[in-house]
Length: 109
Length: 112
Image (cartoon, rainbow over all chains, first blue to last red; front, side, top):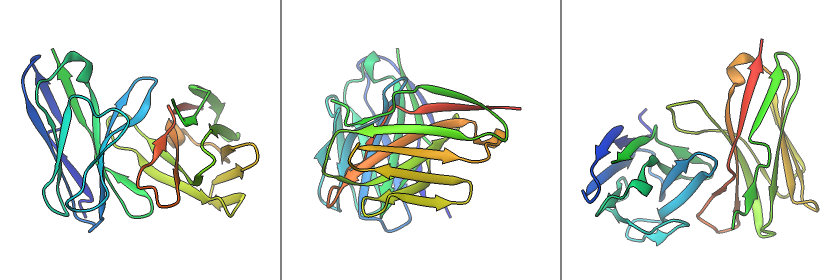
């Protein structure tokens, strides 16, 4: 019973490098999300996908791109990482309530 | 502009006593409210929810109260237990809205 699985769990990047965070859910949910959590800021929505084939910007989309590969998978890409993108990233999927993955800790140096 | 606000960043309570967490929202279109609990190094997990047609929802030790006129909700934990020590997030969404807006969180510490 995996739920929402995201990889990698930890990553250190140099400024300017690119990387992709992968996310998959096995609950057959239509909606998927990427949030970032920063101290004192709570959870802020980066991008979401209401259904397969659609993606929309959230509160803080700058510097990120997403791909909804199929119903199960929703990836988040940092094209040119910046120190301001050091954060904990959570993927989630939703039916009525939203279910989160365990988080990806990203440090950009 | 944060639409969901948790104005108390932290709360310390003695084991066995009541914990009361507060949340305010500004968007009158919100009609579904949730509380999430988060332990360090884990993802948030769903705790309890309430729709705007109700003013109270109870699940075991957890009760959520909604005051629509004041745009305010609260989470009561009775009695508080050491395992309740975590960060609690309030979240809200509107009808047909795919997005959830979250508050900044309240860190609860239950003292033995």
